[in-house]
Image 1 (cartoon, rainbow over the protein chains, first blue to last red):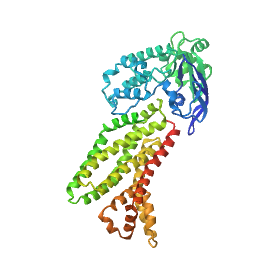
Image 2: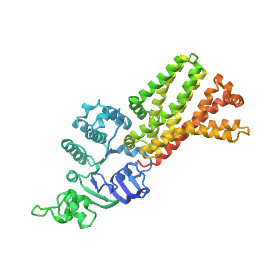
Image 3: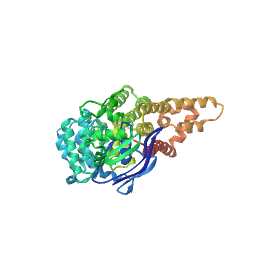
Image 4: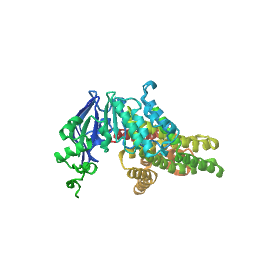
Length: 262
Length: 255
C-alpha cells in the first residue's frame, strides 16, 4: 500500500531520516517507536507530503507522491498536537471537513463522535476545549471518513483511561477491516494488543521492522516493552529510553542493578 | 477553495481584534468628518491616518493569524487539498475580512460625507493597501518559521515602506538637487505603494496647486487615464508579486 524507498531528510545539520526503506501493506498495524527526535513524526509527515524528502521516493498504491494531493483522501491523520481556529465551533470543524472531502453521509463513520459524546460540545468554540478534548476531536476526525490508511501520532497521549480504551477498541475494530494503521506511541503497553509489526527508529535510521510474533520468539518475551528492551540490549543500542520505562526484573522480583546505576 | 475561505473568514470575523479595528476606523473617520467643516480637509487628515494604520494593522494581523493557524494549516495539508489552494484560501479569508472592516469603518462615513472622486480614490487606496500588505505579510510569515522573527520582519517592512523609503527619496533629492529630477522622483515614489496612494489622492485635491512644477508634472501624469491605469497596474503588481512568491516558497516548504 505504501512503499518507501531510500528516503533521506536533513534539517540543516540534523539528520532526521537516514536512508529509510519499507513496504507497508494492508491489514498491518505498525507501531513506529523510538526515542524523542528519532524521526517518527518526520517519517509520518513525509508520507503525508508535509515534509519533502531530500532524496528517495514514496509510493502510495503504486503511485509516486509528488504534489498531487488526491491520494490523501484515503488517509485519516491524527496529529500529535491538534490546534484549531480559536473561534470555530466544534460542529463547524466537522462540517467544514465533510464539506472539503465531499463524502456521502452514508459512508461517514461517526462512531467516535458518539462514543466520545462530542455532539454535546458541538456549540463550543475550539479555544475553550481542554487538551484531552481536542485530542478526542482529532481522533474523531481521523476516523470520520472511513479511510483505508490511518496514521495516528501519539493517539492516547493526554486521553483519560476510559477514552483511551474507547479509542483502542476502535483501532482494533478498524484493524479487523483489513486497513493499514500506523501508530506512534511511547506507551508500549497500549500498543501491545493492537500491533502486528514493530518499526524501530533511532537517530533517523530504521533499526528494524519486524512482525511482533517474530520479535516475541526471538526474545522469548510476551510483553512488547520487555521484548524491545531485550532487543535493544542484545544489539547494544543506546537503550536508556527503554530502560527507564521497563526495568527488567529477575525471578525474585528485584530490580537488576546494572541498568539502574547512574 | 471558497469553502475553506468561508470558514477562515467566519473564524476571523468573530475575533475581537477585527471588530476593534473596524470600530477604530469608523470612529476616527466619523469624528474627523464631524470636526472639520470642509470635507476635503477631513479627507486629508483621514488619508494620513489611513496610510499609517492600514498597512500596519494588515501586516501585524495577518502575520499573527498565520502563525496561530499553523497547526490548522497542517491539518488541512493532511486532507486532499493542494498547498496552493490552502494558502490562497487563507489569503482570501484574511484579505476579505480586512477589506470589509475597511469598507465598513471608512467606506460608510466617506460615502455619507464626501461621495466624490476624492472619496472614492481614498477608498481605492485603502483597499489596495490592505491587499498589498496582507500579501507582503504572507511572504514574511511563510519565509520564517519562527513567530517572533516573522512579526519582527513584518514590522521592519512596514517601517521601510511607511518611513524609511521617503527618507531615502528625500536624500536622493537633496544630493542631486542641481539636476532636473521630476521624472526620477515620479518613478521612485511609484515604487512604494504607500507613496503611490498618497500622490494619487493628493493630486485630486486642491492642495496639489501648492506643489509647484513637480506637482504640475504629477498632476499631468496621474490625472490622465494612462496615469490611472499606471496606478492600478502598480498596485496590482504589489498585490500579486509577493503572494506569488509566498506561494512558491510555501509549495517547497516543510511543515
